[in-house]
Image (cartoon, rainbow over all chains, first blue to last red):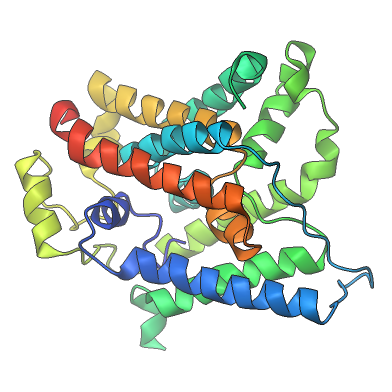
Length: 121
Length: 185
């Protein structure tokens, strides 16, 4: 994450400006291999390291939670320039200020837990 | 071996992300980073007040190991494998950022005014970081996943909900950068 600059605020801004292929290349190549690999696993009934069939958990069917939640997440992703994975990468890299983002993210998760039953899902 | 000190191109990083997802699938786990935020709330005692956090967090310990790995990776990437942390973003992007008041965009890994030590003495910077974090935490749990859980894991399994979520991510991101940034910065 650090070495590919996917944890850089500047790269996220550039991505949403559509001014570089870099981030799209990262997500796109991961996704291309992901789709191909998942297809092959299902087709060939590939077993996990424990000898069990590999499980895929389908997401619950809905529209509103994914669209509303997605938009809210996108606002934060662009503002803080970091999604939940790179937060930890940047902590390791030594940026003390990212801890403020982590505190906010924990707070946001807690608020969701509080309001969950009142939100459209 | 000099390449390892340079920024890694997308065709190295993307396949590595896919590899992590497959390694987790092969040990019966699902790649998704935002779930850790819920786990951390539970460890902090949130389950006593809100039933959403009342679950067996120990079943999620493996994911906290992924978090630990990301922290170690960030440390190694920044302090061992990098000589020059500047980010070679598009000159047009640099110009737009200068218009918003970001000086020397791309010379550092992160913008100094938001992430440098000076951010701690600026109420505005702290509010931006805290607000960004709140939106990330609330939105990812509401949507049931973030970039890793939906854009990588979910879309790899051709899940329509994940496509809706990813479209939402981009609507939110584009609104933030094109409509709200000029008001905020």
